[in-house]
Image 1 (spheres, one colour):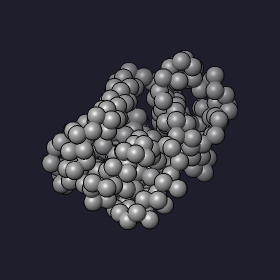
Image 2 (cartoon, rainbow, N blue to C red):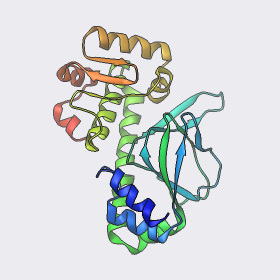
Image 3 (cartoon, helix red, strand yellow):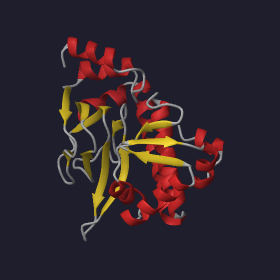
Length: 241
């Protein structure tokens, strides 16, 4: 990436990246980085492909998922603007899942090998990578509990709160609304429900004047009721970011 491209990146990206600017500058100076724009519903990679690159999502939403033998899909993670699209098996040579854009996406693609070498030589960058992996692991642990034990209203409400907390951490969205480009099928595949069940749950939340999902956005009408629907306390919600 040219110096001009890097300066443009710094100008257009507020302080919402998983990596700070010094770390990003170090990575760009030591690796072969490139900026890519992708349309919606575009595969970033498929399961089994070479895992030689890492992606920093600058704009847009990406879903990471697996396909089961009968053709059903389990969404493992939604990757949001500013996040490093990463897996716990970062050292493996091939992809263990699929990654596909939900919206149009702008991403920074970097070579994995020199990036990992940098994390070994830089304690600061290595610590940041460990923090990212631990936060990803914590989210997956929450998801296991949600899928295994929680009723539909709690699953959907918690999904909304998880995303709200992560977007709020990066100053994306307002106090009571956020971009919400997920379809009911995607919400179903992330929560282990059927699309019919998701639709019924969303209608219940709207009827109770808790949230309203409409035209790619989510508006919270009553925070206390949303936390109650999710089985969360205010302290639980604050701990998500």
